[in-house]
Image 1 (cartoon, rainbow, N blue to C red):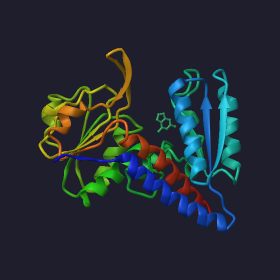
Image 2: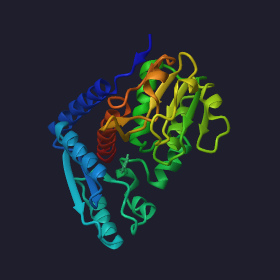
Image 3: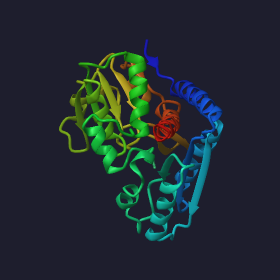
Length: 285
Ligand code: GUN
């Protein structure tokens, strides 16, 4: 029987643990705070930011939302980040991506104090993760790793294939799996015979952003399939959210699989809260 990995339930457990820690900090007069910066009106980003705010408040943290006009200048955005960096009530800072085209995302992200960079996107955190040092770890790959450790126990020696080479998911995911002693392959759009490469995987992580691209014939029997994709498509005249994995055909072959929705997605926000708690604890010694 294929195990469906319930990310929604796992995320609820992580959030409950975070809430317990937050309550204990409050006894000492410390309240973790997360600042989220949204520039412009991207509809998907607005939904994400709303959900992040609700989850932050639910675990007892302070949420500081900064909604800026789409035409905000780089100088004004950098000035806001400087202010948040200096604010002792703010332990985590997240600038929602993508930013409008006139803003340089790398410059903006690298302006965040690395200790407050709860996305783990700052170049210092990327370097620390790549060299196995204590860092802020990007939330989506961290959530995937937690689910994999929970399912497998040790990941040592397993063949892991990550499909997708983004800075947000693919590359940090590969680093984390390597850190857990997997044999890691990063595959991408130019990989030759992608299906055959994927069929070598004990752990297959799909993070390509292409709806239902990974079908059952990409999956080794009994493998664990982690679907990072969130794609909005039209089917039968209705809007629907599907992953990068074709669920039915992959689930028929896999040993374990994450559904979409209800798999990786909820874990991402739970890990953001966990990272904010970590940042707060580190800043308070
Ligand atoms: N946009 C899509 N995913 C993310 C994320 O994990 N962090 C930020 N800041 N923006 C995003």
